[in-house]
Amino acid sequence: MSTTRPRKPTVHASASLLAGSPRRVTGHIEVENRGAEELVVRAVEVAGAGIVPVVSTVAPGDSARVRVRLRLDPHTPPGRREVEVVVGDARTTAVVEIAEHPRVRISPPAVAVRGAPGATVTARIVVANLGNVTVPLDRLGAVTLDEDGGVCRSLEGALRAEGERGVQAVLDEAVRRIAGTRVDRLRVRAVDPAPVEPGETRAVDLELHLPPDMSAGRTYAGMLRLVGASLLIQVTAEGAAAEESGAPAPAQAASRPRAKRTSTTRRAT
Image (cartoon, rainbow, N blue to C red; front, side, top):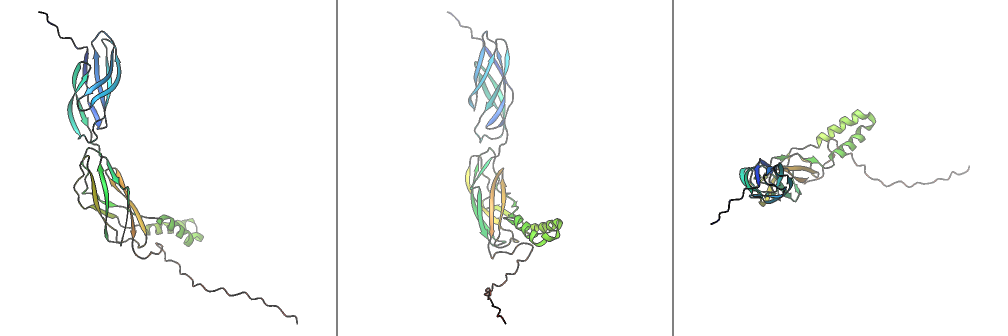
């Protein structure tokens, strides 16, 4: 009766910490070649990540640090966990630490609404949670609005009004007029404030509380930030067109028909 001795493993491996965001987990695996021939490492197998391609050559009796990069499911929850790593005929364990990776897509990227100053209007967007943590909707906050064309109009008006008095007078007047275009912030609230879970895509209705000090007939714009994503909000205040901020509109002179030019012929005396 013959017995076969178990073959000694020719590879010894030990893993260090593998860490990063789900799509970019990196680290090193120490590989020792205990065989008599050169070892070419082309792949390692990591539990939960499958076959991971690598490129490393280890001489007999030598060791090398093999760099590993894992691409996990983007919704993999953050935290630490142990995984099995297989290199050739060697097995070891590694600690994988997944970092929080908030990522959101908002569509459409911009909404336009109309309403009277101080009114509450609604807008619908779609929020897709592409990351690995929940996206809260209960603290959307407020948006700073800028009047479209307000700065240019203020500078133009300041030049017309104070251009003959010098640069400083123009600048002072321009600052006063620009300050007059500022309005209170737009307050935003989600009708359903339940968080959006990783991998979830959901329609979200927003309540927009318009500033009461908007000038009717003017358009304002601002950016709502949500976990790194941006939503452009444009608001047109309904009502009669407002006069230029900071200065009354010049009175329009009544048009009168031009008098016909008459030619007179001086009679010779």
